[in-house]
Image 1: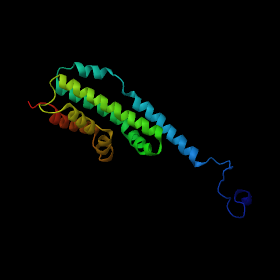
Image 2 (image 1 turned 120 degrees about the horizontal axis):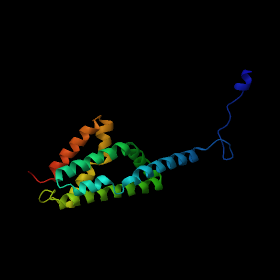
Image 3 (image 1 turned 45 degrees about the vertical axis):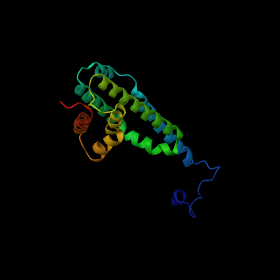
Image 4 (image 1 turned 90 degrees about the horizontal axis):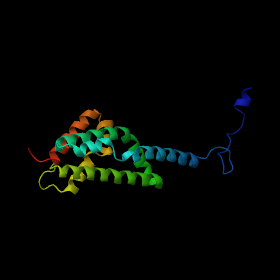
Length: 176
Protein backbone atom coordinates (compact mmCIF):
# COMPACT_ATOMS: atom_id res chain seq x y z
CA UNK A 1 0.00 0.00 0.00
CA UNK A 2 2.78 2.47 0.83
CA UNK A 3 4.20 1.82 -2.66
CA UNK A 4 1.10 3.44 -4.15
CA UNK A 5 1.57 6.57 -2.04
CA UNK A 6 5.37 6.74 -2.34
CA UNK A 7 6.40 4.74 -5.40
CA UNK A 8 10.04 3.58 -5.44
CA UNK A 9 12.55 5.32 -7.63
CA UNK A 10 13.68 8.87 -8.30
CA UNK A 11 11.31 11.81 -8.01
CA UNK A 12 9.43 12.82 -11.15
CA UNK A 13 11.15 15.32 -13.46
CA UNK A 14 10.18 18.99 -13.30
CA UNK A 15 7.28 20.01 -15.53
CA UNK A 16 8.04 20.75 -19.15
CA UNK A 17 6.36 22.92 -21.78
CA UNK A 18 3.69 20.27 -22.43
CA UNK A 19 3.10 19.58 -18.73
CA UNK A 20 -0.35 19.61 -17.16
CA UNK A 21 0.93 21.49 -14.10
CA UNK A 22 0.06 25.17 -14.08
CA UNK A 23 3.18 27.16 -14.97
CA UNK A 24 4.27 29.97 -12.66
CA UNK A 25 4.02 32.70 -15.30
CA UNK A 26 0.21 32.51 -15.70
CA UNK A 27 -0.15 32.37 -11.93
CA UNK A 28 1.98 35.50 -11.57
CA UNK A 29 -0.04 37.19 -14.32
CA UNK A 30 -3.28 36.25 -12.56
CA UNK A 31 -1.92 37.70 -9.30
CA UNK A 32 -0.92 40.93 -11.04
CA UNK A 33 -4.37 41.10 -12.63
CA UNK A 34 -6.04 40.76 -9.21
CA UNK A 35 -3.81 43.55 -7.85
CA UNK A 36 -4.67 45.74 -10.82
CA UNK A 37 -8.40 45.10 -10.45
CA UNK A 38 -8.26 45.91 -6.74
CA UNK A 39 -6.20 49.02 -7.45
CA UNK A 40 -8.72 50.23 -10.03
CA UNK A 41 -11.51 49.79 -7.51
CA UNK A 42 -9.72 51.87 -4.91
CA UNK A 43 -7.79 54.33 -7.04
CA UNK A 44 -10.64 55.37 -9.32
CA UNK A 45 -12.85 56.35 -6.40
CA UNK A 46 -11.47 59.89 -6.44
CA UNK A 47 -14.34 61.82 -8.12
CA UNK A 48 -16.31 64.73 -6.69
CA UNK A 49 -17.57 63.93 -3.20
CA UNK A 50 -20.01 65.79 -0.97
CA UNK A 51 -17.25 66.63 1.51
CA UNK A 52 -15.28 68.40 -1.24
CA UNK A 53 -18.24 70.70 -1.78
CA UNK A 54 -18.56 71.22 1.99
CA UNK A 55 -14.89 72.21 2.21
CA UNK A 56 -15.29 74.60 -0.72
CA UNK A 57 -18.15 76.41 1.05
CA UNK A 58 -16.58 76.49 4.52
CA UNK A 59 -15.53 80.10 5.27
CA UNK A 60 -12.76 79.11 7.74
CA UNK A 61 -9.40 78.13 6.15
CA UNK A 62 -8.26 76.16 9.20
CA UNK A 63 -11.51 74.21 9.25
CA UNK A 64 -11.11 73.56 5.50
CA UNK A 65 -7.58 72.27 6.06
CA UNK A 66 -8.50 70.02 8.98
CA UNK A 67 -11.40 68.52 7.05
CA UNK A 68 -9.16 67.89 4.01
CA UNK A 69 -6.67 66.07 6.24
CA UNK A 70 -9.41 64.05 7.97
CA UNK A 71 -10.81 62.87 4.65
CA UNK A 72 -7.27 62.16 3.45
CA UNK A 73 -6.74 59.97 6.50
CA UNK A 74 -9.84 57.94 5.70
CA UNK A 75 -8.63 57.44 2.13
CA UNK A 76 -5.11 56.54 3.25
CA UNK A 77 -6.44 54.01 5.75
CA UNK A 78 -8.21 52.18 2.91
CA UNK A 79 -5.50 52.53 0.28
CA UNK A 80 -2.06 52.60 1.97
CA UNK A 81 -1.34 48.85 2.05
CA UNK A 82 -2.56 48.27 -1.49
CA UNK A 83 -0.72 51.39 -2.65
CA UNK A 84 2.55 49.86 -1.45
CA UNK A 85 1.85 46.60 -3.29
CA UNK A 86 0.87 48.45 -6.47
CA UNK A 87 3.95 50.70 -6.36
CA UNK A 88 6.19 47.68 -5.93
CA UNK A 89 4.47 45.78 -8.75
CA UNK A 90 4.45 48.76 -11.14
CA UNK A 91 8.01 48.31 -12.52
CA UNK A 92 7.14 44.79 -13.68
CA UNK A 93 3.63 45.47 -15.00
CA UNK A 94 2.78 48.30 -17.39
CA UNK A 95 -0.94 48.16 -16.54
CA UNK A 96 -0.27 48.61 -12.84
CA UNK A 97 2.33 51.30 -13.59
CA UNK A 98 -0.26 53.21 -15.63
CA UNK A 99 -2.83 52.92 -12.83
CA UNK A 100 -0.31 54.11 -10.21
CA UNK A 101 0.61 57.07 -12.43
CA UNK A 102 -3.06 57.91 -13.01
CA UNK A 103 -3.85 57.79 -9.29
CA UNK A 104 -0.86 59.97 -8.41
CA UNK A 105 -1.93 62.47 -11.08
CA UNK A 106 -5.50 62.55 -9.76
CA UNK A 107 -4.26 62.93 -6.20
CA UNK A 108 -2.01 65.83 -7.18
CA UNK A 109 -4.89 67.47 -9.04
CA UNK A 110 -7.09 67.06 -5.97
CA UNK A 111 -4.49 68.69 -3.73
CA UNK A 112 -3.98 71.48 -6.29
CA UNK A 113 -7.74 72.11 -6.24
CA UNK A 114 -7.75 72.17 -2.42
CA UNK A 115 -4.89 74.69 -2.36
CA UNK A 116 -6.79 76.89 -4.84
CA UNK A 117 -9.88 76.76 -2.61
CA UNK A 118 -7.74 77.61 0.40
CA UNK A 119 -6.07 80.51 -1.44
CA UNK A 120 -9.41 81.89 -2.63
CA UNK A 121 -10.51 81.96 1.00
CA UNK A 122 -7.39 83.86 2.14
CA UNK A 123 -5.93 80.66 3.58
CA UNK A 124 -2.36 80.76 2.22
CA UNK A 125 0.35 82.62 4.09
CA UNK A 126 1.96 85.56 2.32
CA UNK A 127 4.70 84.61 -0.11
CA UNK A 128 3.72 80.96 -0.35
CA UNK A 129 3.48 79.95 -4.00
CA UNK A 130 0.41 77.76 -4.72
CA UNK A 131 2.62 75.17 -6.46
CA UNK A 132 4.86 74.93 -3.40
CA UNK A 133 1.77 74.67 -1.18
CA UNK A 134 0.45 71.86 -3.39
CA UNK A 135 3.77 70.03 -3.16
CA UNK A 136 3.70 70.32 0.63
CA UNK A 137 0.16 68.91 0.82
CA UNK A 138 1.00 66.15 -1.67
CA UNK A 139 4.06 65.06 0.29
CA UNK A 140 2.63 65.35 3.77
CA UNK A 141 -0.62 63.56 2.94
CA UNK A 142 1.05 60.87 0.83
CA UNK A 143 0.09 57.27 1.36
CA UNK A 144 3.78 56.50 1.75
CA UNK A 145 4.12 58.80 4.76
CA UNK A 146 0.84 57.57 6.24
CA UNK A 147 2.03 53.97 5.86
CA UNK A 148 5.42 54.75 7.37
CA UNK A 149 4.04 56.46 10.46
CA UNK A 150 0.78 54.58 11.06
CA UNK A 151 1.47 51.07 9.81
CA UNK A 152 5.22 50.75 10.33
CA UNK A 153 5.78 53.04 13.33
CA UNK A 154 2.47 52.29 15.04
CA UNK A 155 0.99 55.78 15.26
CA UNK A 156 -2.73 55.89 15.88
CA UNK A 157 -4.50 57.17 12.75
CA UNK A 158 -6.00 59.99 14.80
CA UNK A 159 -2.51 61.03 15.97
CA UNK A 160 -1.29 61.07 12.36
CA UNK A 161 -4.30 63.19 11.39
CA UNK A 162 -3.68 65.69 14.18
CA UNK A 163 0.05 65.90 13.40
CA UNK A 164 -0.54 66.26 9.64
CA UNK A 165 -3.19 68.96 10.16
CA UNK A 166 -1.03 70.87 12.65
CA UNK A 167 2.00 70.63 10.34
CA UNK A 168 0.04 71.74 7.29
CA UNK A 169 -1.54 74.59 9.23
CA UNK A 170 1.92 75.80 10.28
CA UNK A 171 3.22 75.52 6.71
CA UNK A 172 0.26 76.90 4.76
CA UNK A 173 -2.00 79.15 6.79
CA UNK A 174 -1.35 82.82 7.53
CA UNK A 175 -0.06 83.57 11.03
CA UNK A 176 -2.78 84.72 13.37
